[in-house]
Image 1: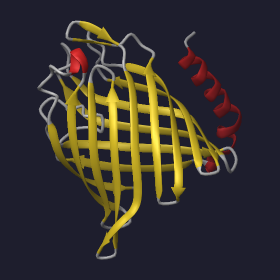
Image 2 (image 1 turned 90 degrees about the vertical axis):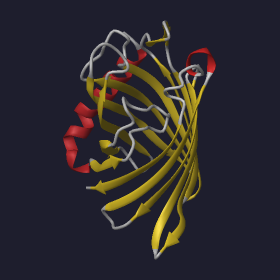
Image 3 (image 1 turned 135 degrees about the vertical axis):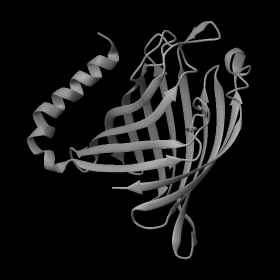
Length: 247
């Protein structure tokens, strides 16, 4: 039995004994986003850099004032034929872990599953174990580091089966500035997948209303190593806008 399966069994046991006993404590957060260009924060672009929708759906269960069960879920209109011999129409990116707050520091060990409605021979489905550490300097300013390693065999890239390791460092400044009394939030990030790509990004998030947001993101996508550096189709810069509706 893999480590990831053991973690999910333990968390499932926790849910069966505690969470389901008082489901009313579960907090649900969600939003629908529509992208002008489907490019994620790791620089992965989709089949033809087309516009498209995504759904974010997150769940939080408080165990006590410092410990939470946290689930992040993202569903995107993938519709990509570049990764194999079949077309994957839906991509699901899901994380489940325990979030612990210690003063101004947050620890979040998690299991991550990336799966599609089709999984061609080059294997685009994958699973990871990871750890996020966030350090808050104030309620509006924090930095976060995310490191994860793939547990599955990896995907075939340029004839080589490659198992992914990712490091993601981000600076977050809420209420960076205000325009007509509307807050603008700032996110600056650098993410690197070993032998694949390094991605620098800057993102501005605005709140038009309590429910509607308008965001703008610039992604500088750089190929890394013997695999990623030769993939000119992926190594591009993008200016991405998105409109989000929270519910």
